[in-house]
Length: 386
Image (cartoon, rainbow, N blue to C red; front, top):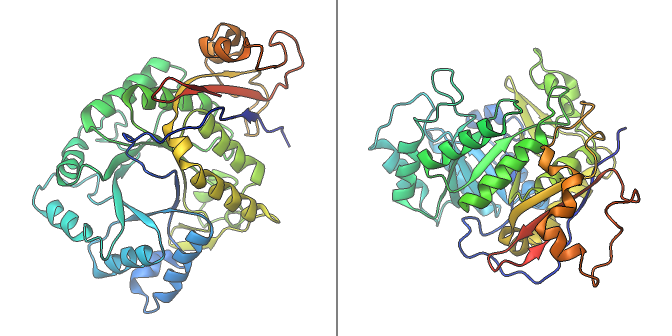
């Protein structure tokens, strides 16, 4: 087992929440498919699904994620989510292939805005947007985003983005900035599964881009991870029984702590924390030993520190080494300016570590662990955190 990178994330000062943030609580989200999820709309026993929803709350999941379907059943589901104490993000309210119809969506938004029945907090307009097989084209999203904004600007509105694996920082930054400018989204989201694939080595570069654009545009970002051990098993046909075995606690922590280090304001489990579904086959994740309980404790800790986490803006990050990862790749790619050689010249490092009241090991000697990563963040008052 390769060693887990360690992250130093210490809050030095009391932090007031950022009143301008679109999120009011750190998001711990699960894509919900549930037991026999694909057949949910044909069942006569909704109690099973309410139980699964309630289990999400027990697992310290505070946001549920479900695609919209034009049926009374889905409205019953959204109501059960509210009764279970969950916030709901509605996905695919309009298919990525549907044309813009300004009349029908208004009616749907009106129905779902009934807070006595539902607890809808926002809409994921589409997943991994593309148009005519072009992942760079997000031009069809703005009408839907604008519709949601005009209906209720407090609702979250976003698409879960997909970035090609690339070392071109300008491509990634330009793509995300273009998306923000066009869609006026108030939440950023992306998926990346570095511990479940042998081909992903730009995880930290992608995190840096989202952290940078999140700060410069004052838009929080969330990160979508997976408990699937090997992503190729998900796409096997017939479904591979290995899907039932969740990946290790260390790998999931690796993904979560990495996202936190770059300023994430939420995490989302795909295809779910407890249950997943592939090719109409539902499966319950099996975690090793007490791994589930430890993750639940981590969820609780993140949610309980929402005010602090939501108030911080990502500034910079430095890796002592990039050769030790827990994924399938030998080296985890990081930007050159995020390597340790630039740490001594960082203005935030100078403000903290060259202060004699903050004793640390000399950054030039070799006593620092190779797994160490230090990130710096600021609040709206300019106070520094690491």
